[in-house]
Image (cartoon, rainbow, N blue to C red; front, side, top):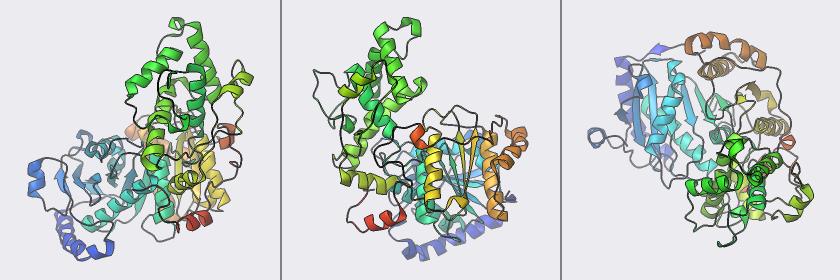
Length: 493
């Protein structure tokens, strides 16, 4: 574990001299960190700070007295938050948040909330930096670039950390994995290791297939999204571009069809049968049915209309649905569609993993994660194996059933295990990581729930594979290099 060191007044003086050096070196990072940084906090705080540096801000209450915090906005418009513990161990954790959020612009509250949520990293002595990304909506490479921008900003303001780790949770796991491949693909690069927790690691071109299945299976049974009396559109759009439907409106339709929010005894027989069939066929847990359908509605619309110009990246041709009370009727009646090849390419280029990893990567995943199924870890494992890079990977699993947050003891234990691996070169095992957790549980509580013997089944064991979708990685490094030469490839920032 990186040893804490105190921040002294001398450190602040040194940091201030770095600001002048940062300005002199600005040309070296032009196009990434250019222009001014404006603090999102109060107007008085913004006015009292220089336009090109972070603004001192109040820390979240759980870090009061423990750290010095800063906020700002980078040249691309991404708000961010930084915390440096008073007893800093010299290393930095750069955080990639999940989502994606669907607001038009960057949310200044997001990075502050994430800092509070993962304050255990600061309690462990690490500086922490998290970006809210420059805009809402889908864009894995964009989010990875904003994460890297913030790392560079931190270096310009506070100097090069002893070691730098990237952490990603949920979709942020996909973002952090992209950071690893794009900016940490060589030894002695800017990143020393990565921690991916409950990560969406199947990539965009395959990682949402079960939500594609949910979208079409739901409509087969419910016929209210859209209703027959409403304008029709292909279901791969998620929702037509001009629709004014809200999340509350979608919830009302889901309740109308399935009674999902009612006690079982209060549901009608047709509602119960619809619910049973939808859950059995898609494998989506009942408790996250609404959130998965929201993604397959609003985020699909963002991907299709906001990022891909109305092109379809999704397919369910060749998929045989099973588990319902009448599979023959379901397969005969469910909507079918094929993907546009250029849309698949652009989504793949933006978010698929090549497996080209050159630094230690430790993952932590709840076995019963109801949102990012644990089989996402199998997709990541097989991607690194396909690239002959799985020697850089250690995967750990816990008997937990939440997606958005795991035990604080496990987060602290994980970053410690990763740091020890980086520092010593000795690769941990799932069993050794599990064994070291008890000491952190005595400090933070929350429990240690590791299952060192667990190994997830293949991605195809949980998600209906599409023809040709059994080989990993979904995008090879050679494909990525070839596609990168195409003007306008991918998803625009």
